[in-house]
Amino acid sequence: MLSENIKTIRKSKGLSQEELAVKLNVVRQTISKWEQGRSVPDSDLLISISEVLETPVSTLLGENIAESKPDELKVISEKLEVINLQLAQRRIMRRKIVHWLLILLCAVIVIIFAVLIIAANSPYLGWDYNDPETAVLGTFFHGLEWLFVRLAPIILIGAGIGVFLTRKK
Image (cartoon, rainbow, N blue to C red; front, top):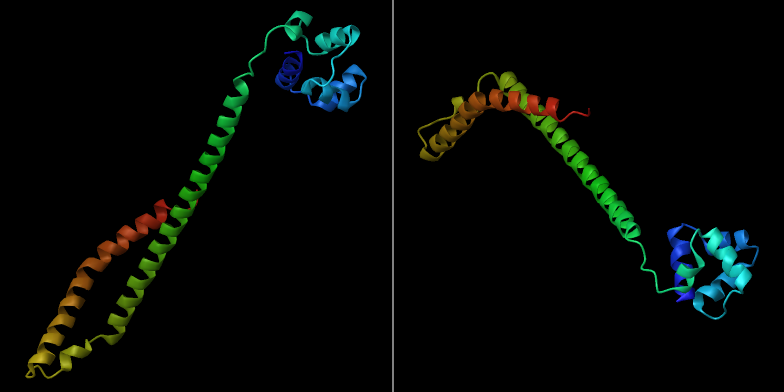
């Protein structure tokens, strides 16, 4: 009982064996022996221990003292803090990835528009549409170009807004 109580109270006061030994003017190994139950302090030292630990001698000699719960709460709160930091880092990384993907999308749209403007007349317009395969392919290209010209400005505006909203604050 005494050995466990000394150890429990010392830890609850936030003292190491070395710190307690210095306050009691003994060596650290003496504290270790007391806490392991291999030796027992004499009456004078028992009074000094009770004064240093601010605990009555009767408590030291009494029943086992349960370890305090605040230590468990402290450990849990530290773990939660680490988890929160990890989640925040993931959120920041995702925001950066989305930001750069939106910038890339804007660049691709601008490049495709530039190519379409430079080409002025789409190359498929000069094809011979008497051949059915060429006609189908030309119609397909014309449909893609028509769809791109209609949707790209809307996508570009949306991506621009997304780039603005995901920028670093």
